[in-house]
Length: 613
Image (cartoon, rainbow, N blue to C red; front, side, top):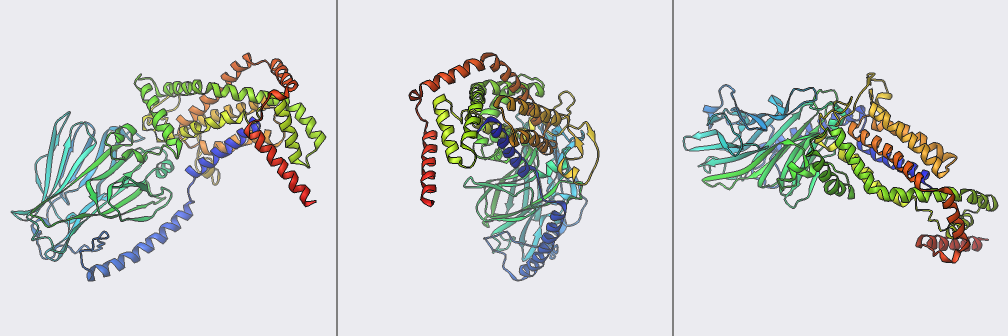
């Protein structure tokens, strides 16, 4: 396999990964899927209403499904069914949470250190489109906390540094029988503690009601420039108590039932997350996503969970909310697996990113340089580390180029009909010349995991978000020098803009392909495929993070420099003489395992052909 052949195969592999990562079903398919899902959910709701009227409420195996708003008709919490909605803010250096007295729920959360792509206050969710409630049976009637106006116990507060404070919202059945929602916040933290406490409610809550139903849903607003990219990275993640984790495919809208013990469930947006964490476990649950392609909002996400209730005089269920960025080190510091939401790639790629790329990147960040310079230095360090492999690859490719005239003579003599014999003759030539035909491919194969690792690292790195460099205003998304609007087919494949960084990457790849063809002496179909594939691949990279295109551009340019320097030290005439000297001493060259295996296969093939005759 010559180097140009390998380059073509490498580009194809990258394209396949790129398309599988970024392409999603058509709008028509998603709309039809949504219609089918809505119809199915409507049927399920009608069945749930009928079942709820007949069934007992102590089903411990699943979340109790209730689709009625006729709550507390006997007036157990009647004094708190009427009132005016009021809002209370609690905040620290990082978050500002607004809590409504109606339902005692977190109404909205603003991240104070971040802005939206158009420089507005960044809110993870806001207002009526966010739902949060606890459902339970009391005195034979269904009670839903979202229907009541809670009594506030405490005041709005701001905490900093090591300070902390709390506020309570109380739902009372009597002066000495109540349920509290307790919100506690420490300074300089993205964690908001949330406890559900009951006091003397064991005789109020139905005796056979051994679970509370917790329901939470948000509609994620558009916070990033590229809606398609944001939707492709917005979904529900969850982790079980046995440390396994899973998520809903971002390209699909589905409902999934979770039957095992659950540690946390996250409404994960592209660069930020809203996570509900249990300090013990949630017994069971359901999660769901829904996408409206015509909406200006990203996606709706839901969770429904069961919380055990033991009918004690005083009970407390401890939870936490995480409202913050998907920053790897920040999430990892909590030591509960939240960092697994960040897509660092599959297999060995995630380990390369986690234990090599991220530590080096973080070390460079401490220098407080522009992120464009940091990517430049990171690429330079990578190229220096891989330079021995680059040198070996170049040397092997040069040897193969020198041998090509002799290989052409063998091909003319043997012909194309007997490929087994042709390969056998080639192997004899390789052996005499002391050339490994895979010598140019193996070093590149070793570099492939790093190439793919960066493909995942840059689009997932919040550090690049809203960081500018030269004409690029945000390295975490595409740069645009010309927006031409929606053009059928072209916009779906290429996008509605032209990315200059992508153009530079494509041009440098074409130049890189030309140099490879000159080094390897490639001709024919493989030569032209090397030029066509970067053009096709441009359709994928036109819509990705400009930081990724910038890295690929730098990598190509540095490879040009490496090849130029290597040419200064590699004399083709001396290399040719060395090959000819090796051919004079064939016994001094041992067969490689690959050569031996190939020769054995060729002999076996010849035996089979003779047997057929």
